[in-house]
Length: 318
Image (cartoon, rainbow, N blue to C red; front, top):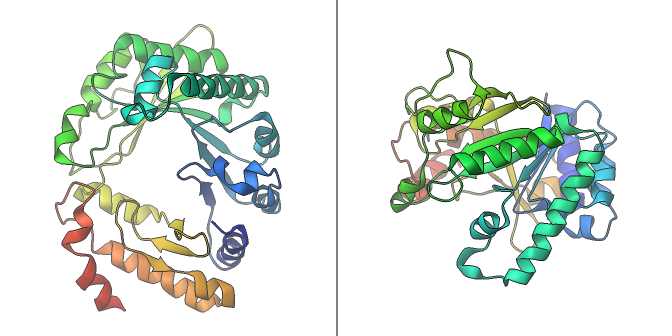
Protein backbone atom coordinates (compact mmCIF):
# COMPACT_ATOMS: atom_id res chain seq x y z
CA UNK A 1 0.00 0.00 0.00
CA UNK A 2 1.21 3.51 -0.89
CA UNK A 3 1.78 5.23 2.47
CA UNK A 4 1.56 8.71 0.94
CA UNK A 5 -1.88 7.93 -0.51
CA UNK A 6 -3.13 6.64 2.84
CA UNK A 7 -1.82 9.68 4.71
CA UNK A 8 -3.37 12.07 2.17
CA UNK A 9 -6.71 10.25 2.29
CA UNK A 10 -6.70 10.14 6.10
CA UNK A 11 -5.89 13.86 6.38
CA UNK A 12 -8.86 14.67 4.13
CA UNK A 13 -11.22 12.39 6.08
CA UNK A 14 -10.04 13.65 9.48
CA UNK A 15 -10.46 17.29 8.40
CA UNK A 16 -13.89 16.88 6.83
CA UNK A 17 -15.69 14.20 8.87
CA UNK A 18 -16.21 13.31 12.56
CA UNK A 19 -14.09 10.15 12.23
CA UNK A 20 -12.97 8.84 15.63
CA UNK A 21 -10.81 5.78 15.00
CA UNK A 22 -8.47 4.25 12.43
CA UNK A 23 -7.28 0.63 12.55
CA UNK A 24 -4.26 -0.74 10.71
CA UNK A 25 -4.83 -4.36 9.83
CA UNK A 26 -4.24 -6.70 6.93
CA UNK A 27 -3.04 -9.24 5.99
CA UNK A 28 -0.18 -8.38 8.25
CA UNK A 29 0.71 -4.66 8.51
CA UNK A 30 4.17 -5.26 10.03
CA UNK A 31 5.35 -6.84 6.74
CA UNK A 32 4.98 -3.46 5.00
CA UNK A 33 8.27 -1.92 3.88
CA UNK A 34 7.54 1.14 6.03
CA UNK A 35 7.85 -1.14 9.09
CA UNK A 36 10.61 -3.41 7.80
CA UNK A 37 12.84 -0.46 6.85
CA UNK A 38 12.01 1.20 10.20
CA UNK A 39 11.15 4.48 8.47
CA UNK A 40 7.81 4.48 10.31
CA UNK A 41 6.43 7.28 8.16
CA UNK A 42 2.86 6.17 8.86
CA UNK A 43 3.41 5.82 12.61
CA UNK A 44 5.04 9.25 12.82
CA UNK A 45 2.02 10.69 11.02
CA UNK A 46 -0.35 9.19 13.62
CA UNK A 47 1.46 11.12 16.36
CA UNK A 48 0.11 14.35 14.85
CA UNK A 49 -3.50 13.31 15.50
CA UNK A 50 -3.96 12.73 19.22
CA UNK A 51 -7.75 13.05 18.82
CA UNK A 52 -7.92 9.82 16.77
CA UNK A 53 -7.99 6.37 18.37
CA UNK A 54 -5.41 4.30 16.48
CA UNK A 55 -5.19 0.50 16.64
CA UNK A 56 -2.82 -2.07 15.17
CA UNK A 57 -3.73 -5.72 14.53
CA UNK A 58 -0.89 -8.20 14.08
CA UNK A 59 0.07 -11.85 14.37
CA UNK A 60 2.94 -10.65 16.57
CA UNK A 61 5.83 -12.30 14.73
CA UNK A 62 7.30 -9.04 13.40
CA UNK A 63 5.93 -6.86 16.20
CA UNK A 64 9.46 -6.35 17.45
CA UNK A 65 10.57 -4.09 20.32
CA UNK A 66 11.51 -1.33 17.85
CA UNK A 67 7.91 -1.33 16.55
CA UNK A 68 6.37 -1.48 20.02
CA UNK A 69 8.50 1.49 21.09
CA UNK A 70 6.98 3.47 18.22
CA UNK A 71 3.32 2.72 19.00
CA UNK A 72 3.04 1.98 22.71
CA UNK A 73 2.27 5.56 23.75
CA UNK A 74 -0.03 6.91 21.04
CA UNK A 75 -1.91 3.75 20.00
CA UNK A 76 -5.05 2.92 21.98
CA UNK A 77 -5.19 -0.78 21.17
CA UNK A 78 -2.88 -3.51 19.94
CA UNK A 79 -4.49 -6.78 18.86
CA UNK A 80 -2.41 -9.97 18.81
CA UNK A 81 -3.92 -12.82 16.80
CA UNK A 82 -2.10 -15.83 18.23
CA UNK A 83 -4.97 -18.37 18.66
CA UNK A 84 -2.93 -20.59 21.02
CA UNK A 85 0.10 -20.44 23.33
CA UNK A 86 0.80 -24.10 22.58
CA UNK A 87 3.26 -24.43 19.69
CA UNK A 88 1.72 -27.57 18.16
CA UNK A 89 -1.76 -26.03 18.04
CA UNK A 90 -0.45 -22.62 16.90
CA UNK A 91 1.44 -24.42 14.12
CA UNK A 92 -1.66 -26.35 13.08
CA UNK A 93 -3.68 -23.15 12.74
CA UNK A 94 -1.01 -21.00 11.06
CA UNK A 95 0.67 -23.57 8.81
CA UNK A 96 -1.89 -24.77 6.28
CA UNK A 97 -0.87 -28.04 4.59
CA UNK A 98 2.53 -27.80 6.33
CA UNK A 99 3.68 -25.13 3.88
CA UNK A 100 6.49 -24.13 6.26
CA UNK A 101 8.98 -26.49 7.85
CA UNK A 102 8.75 -27.18 11.57
CA UNK A 103 12.07 -25.40 12.16
CA UNK A 104 10.78 -22.28 10.38
CA UNK A 105 7.65 -22.34 12.48
CA UNK A 106 9.59 -22.80 15.73
CA UNK A 107 11.67 -19.73 14.89
CA UNK A 108 8.50 -17.70 14.23
CA UNK A 109 6.85 -18.90 17.42
CA UNK A 110 9.93 -18.02 19.48
CA UNK A 111 9.98 -14.56 17.89
CA UNK A 112 6.31 -14.16 18.78
CA UNK A 113 6.84 -15.15 22.40
CA UNK A 114 9.91 -12.92 22.76
CA UNK A 115 7.96 -9.98 21.35
CA UNK A 116 5.09 -10.66 23.74
CA UNK A 117 7.55 -10.77 26.65
CA UNK A 118 8.82 -7.33 25.65
CA UNK A 119 5.27 -6.00 25.33
CA UNK A 120 4.45 -7.35 28.78
CA UNK A 121 7.46 -5.56 30.26
CA UNK A 122 6.18 -2.20 28.93
CA UNK A 123 3.20 -2.17 31.35
CA UNK A 124 0.69 -1.48 28.58
CA UNK A 125 -1.50 -4.51 29.27
CA UNK A 126 -4.72 -2.49 29.14
CA UNK A 127 -4.03 -1.86 25.44
CA UNK A 128 -3.30 -5.48 24.53
CA UNK A 129 -5.98 -7.88 23.29
CA UNK A 130 -4.81 -11.45 22.72
CA UNK A 131 -7.14 -12.89 20.08
CA UNK A 132 -8.04 -16.50 19.47
CA UNK A 133 -10.48 -17.79 16.88
CA UNK A 134 -12.05 -20.78 18.65
CA UNK A 135 -12.14 -23.78 16.31
CA UNK A 136 -13.93 -27.00 17.21
CA UNK A 137 -11.53 -29.90 17.69
CA UNK A 138 -8.47 -27.65 17.48
CA UNK A 139 -8.27 -25.11 20.33
CA UNK A 140 -11.66 -25.33 22.05
CA UNK A 141 -10.78 -27.73 24.90
CA UNK A 142 -11.00 -26.49 28.48
CA UNK A 143 -7.25 -27.01 28.80
CA UNK A 144 -6.53 -24.83 25.77
CA UNK A 145 -8.93 -22.11 26.87
CA UNK A 146 -7.44 -22.09 30.38
CA UNK A 147 -3.90 -21.86 29.02
CA UNK A 148 -4.82 -18.75 27.03
CA UNK A 149 -6.71 -17.19 29.93
CA UNK A 150 -3.81 -17.79 32.33
CA UNK A 151 -1.33 -16.47 29.79
CA UNK A 152 -3.33 -13.23 29.52
CA UNK A 153 -3.67 -12.94 33.29
CA UNK A 154 0.07 -13.44 33.83
CA UNK A 155 0.87 -10.69 31.33
CA UNK A 156 -2.07 -8.45 32.31
CA UNK A 157 -3.53 -8.67 28.79
CA UNK A 158 -7.18 -8.88 27.74
CA UNK A 159 -8.26 -12.24 26.28
CA UNK A 160 -10.49 -12.03 23.21
CA UNK A 161 -12.22 -15.11 21.83
CA UNK A 162 -13.74 -14.91 18.35
CA UNK A 163 -16.29 -17.26 16.90
CA UNK A 164 -15.11 -19.15 13.83
CA UNK A 165 -16.63 -17.63 10.70
CA UNK A 166 -17.17 -20.25 7.97
CA UNK A 167 -16.45 -19.19 4.42
CA UNK A 168 -18.16 -22.26 2.96
CA UNK A 169 -21.01 -24.48 4.19
CA UNK A 170 -18.75 -27.47 4.88
CA UNK A 171 -16.82 -25.39 7.44
CA UNK A 172 -19.83 -24.90 9.70
CA UNK A 173 -18.78 -27.98 11.68
CA UNK A 174 -15.91 -25.96 13.17
CA UNK A 175 -18.18 -23.38 14.86
CA UNK A 176 -18.28 -23.37 18.66
CA UNK A 177 -21.44 -21.48 19.64
CA UNK A 178 -21.69 -18.99 22.47
CA UNK A 179 -23.70 -21.21 24.80
CA UNK A 180 -21.21 -24.06 24.59
CA UNK A 181 -18.16 -21.81 24.85
CA UNK A 182 -19.52 -19.74 27.74
CA UNK A 183 -20.29 -22.87 29.74
CA UNK A 184 -16.66 -23.93 29.37
CA UNK A 185 -15.39 -20.47 30.30
CA UNK A 186 -17.61 -20.33 33.39
CA UNK A 187 -16.13 -23.65 34.56
CA UNK A 188 -12.70 -22.05 34.25
CA UNK A 189 -13.59 -19.08 36.46
CA UNK A 190 -14.97 -16.57 33.96
CA UNK A 191 -17.91 -14.48 35.17
CA UNK A 192 -20.61 -13.18 32.83
CA UNK A 193 -23.39 -10.80 33.77
CA UNK A 194 -26.76 -12.48 34.33
CA UNK A 195 -28.17 -10.95 31.15
CA UNK A 196 -25.22 -11.93 28.91
CA UNK A 197 -26.64 -13.49 25.71
CA UNK A 198 -25.60 -17.08 25.20
CA UNK A 199 -27.30 -17.71 21.91
CA UNK A 200 -26.50 -17.29 18.24
CA UNK A 201 -29.83 -15.88 17.11
CA UNK A 202 -29.23 -14.21 13.71
CA UNK A 203 -32.22 -11.93 14.30
CA UNK A 204 -30.79 -10.29 17.43
CA UNK A 205 -27.14 -9.68 16.70
CA UNK A 206 -24.89 -8.81 19.65
CA UNK A 207 -21.31 -8.57 18.37
CA UNK A 208 -19.47 -8.55 21.70
CA UNK A 209 -19.96 -9.94 25.22
CA UNK A 210 -17.63 -9.03 28.09
CA UNK A 211 -16.56 -11.28 30.93
CA UNK A 212 -14.18 -11.19 33.90
CA UNK A 213 -11.56 -13.87 34.44
CA UNK A 214 -10.93 -14.33 38.14
CA UNK A 215 -7.36 -15.52 38.02
CA UNK A 216 -5.42 -14.81 41.21
CA UNK A 217 -2.49 -13.42 39.28
CA UNK A 218 -4.45 -10.55 37.81
CA UNK A 219 -8.06 -10.43 36.69
CA UNK A 220 -8.72 -8.85 33.32
CA UNK A 221 -11.80 -8.08 31.30
CA UNK A 222 -12.22 -10.48 28.40
CA UNK A 223 -14.34 -10.27 25.28
CA UNK A 224 -16.13 -12.71 23.04
CA UNK A 225 -16.91 -11.47 19.54
CA UNK A 226 -19.02 -12.79 16.72
CA UNK A 227 -19.23 -11.34 13.21
CA UNK A 228 -22.09 -13.27 11.62
CA UNK A 229 -21.25 -11.89 8.17
CA UNK A 230 -24.19 -12.34 5.83
CA UNK A 231 -26.79 -12.66 8.58
CA UNK A 232 -29.46 -9.97 8.43
CA UNK A 233 -28.91 -8.53 11.90
CA UNK A 234 -25.12 -8.61 11.59
CA UNK A 235 -25.17 -6.75 8.27
CA UNK A 236 -27.49 -4.11 9.69
CA UNK A 237 -25.25 -3.65 12.74
CA UNK A 238 -22.14 -3.26 10.58
CA UNK A 239 -23.93 -0.72 8.40
CA UNK A 240 -24.97 1.36 11.41
CA UNK A 241 -21.48 1.14 12.92
CA UNK A 242 -20.09 2.81 9.80
CA UNK A 243 -16.99 0.69 9.29
CA UNK A 244 -14.98 1.70 6.23
CA UNK A 245 -12.49 -0.74 4.68
CA UNK A 246 -9.66 0.80 2.66
CA UNK A 247 -7.50 -1.66 0.73
CA UNK A 248 -4.50 -1.56 -1.56
CA UNK A 249 -4.63 -2.48 -5.24
CA UNK A 250 -2.56 -5.54 -6.14
CA UNK A 251 0.28 -3.46 -7.58
CA UNK A 252 0.38 -1.20 -4.51
CA UNK A 253 -0.13 1.90 -6.63
CA UNK A 254 -3.71 2.64 -5.66
CA UNK A 255 -6.31 2.26 -2.94
CA UNK A 256 -9.99 1.42 -2.99
CA UNK A 257 -12.97 1.19 -0.68
CA UNK A 258 -14.70 -2.09 0.14
CA UNK A 259 -18.29 -1.50 1.26
CA UNK A 260 -18.06 -4.77 3.22
CA UNK A 261 -15.05 -6.79 4.34
CA UNK A 262 -16.41 -10.00 2.81
CA UNK A 263 -17.69 -8.59 -0.49
CA UNK A 264 -15.51 -8.31 -3.58
CA UNK A 265 -16.94 -4.95 -4.70
CA UNK A 266 -14.34 -2.20 -5.05
CA UNK A 267 -14.77 1.56 -5.32
CA UNK A 268 -11.52 3.12 -6.49
CA UNK A 269 -10.25 6.16 -4.59
CA UNK A 270 -6.84 6.62 -6.23
CA UNK A 271 -7.62 9.36 -8.76
CA UNK A 272 -9.65 11.45 -6.30
CA UNK A 273 -6.92 11.22 -3.64
CA UNK A 274 -4.14 12.21 -6.04
CA UNK A 275 -6.23 15.21 -7.18
CA UNK A 276 -7.03 16.11 -3.58
CA UNK A 277 -10.71 16.21 -4.59
CA UNK A 278 -12.45 16.21 -1.21
CA UNK A 279 -15.93 16.43 -2.68
CA UNK A 280 -15.36 13.40 -4.91
CA UNK A 281 -13.81 11.36 -2.07
CA UNK A 282 -16.79 12.00 0.20
CA UNK A 283 -19.15 11.16 -2.65
CA UNK A 284 -17.41 7.81 -3.14
CA UNK A 285 -17.72 7.08 0.56
CA UNK A 286 -21.43 7.91 0.30
CA UNK A 287 -21.81 5.51 -2.63
CA UNK A 288 -20.11 2.85 -0.53
CA UNK A 289 -22.64 3.28 2.28
CA UNK A 290 -25.59 3.29 -0.13
CA UNK A 291 -24.37 0.07 -1.70
CA UNK A 292 -23.95 -1.63 1.68
CA UNK A 293 -27.41 -0.45 2.73
CA UNK A 294 -28.89 -2.94 0.26
CA UNK A 295 -26.96 -5.93 1.63
CA UNK A 296 -28.81 -6.58 4.95
CA UNK A 297 -31.69 -9.00 4.78
CA UNK A 298 -30.66 -10.94 1.70
CA UNK A 299 -30.38 -14.10 3.76
CA UNK A 300 -27.05 -15.16 2.26
CA UNK A 301 -24.76 -16.30 5.04
CA UNK A 302 -21.52 -17.31 3.37
CA UNK A 303 -18.67 -15.24 2.02
CA UNK A 304 -19.35 -15.95 -1.66
CA UNK A 305 -22.62 -14.00 -1.44
CA UNK A 306 -21.16 -11.23 -3.62
CA UNK A 307 -21.88 -13.11 -6.84
CA UNK A 308 -25.62 -12.92 -6.17
CA UNK A 309 -26.04 -9.19 -6.46
CA UNK A 310 -22.89 -7.22 -7.17
CA UNK A 311 -23.39 -6.11 -10.78
CA UNK A 312 -26.87 -4.64 -10.95
CA UNK A 313 -27.00 -2.84 -7.59
CA UNK A 314 -23.75 -0.96 -8.00
CA UNK A 315 -24.52 -0.01 -11.60
CA UNK A 316 -27.83 1.49 -10.43
CA UNK A 317 -25.93 3.92 -8.19
CA UNK A 318 -23.30 4.82 -10.74
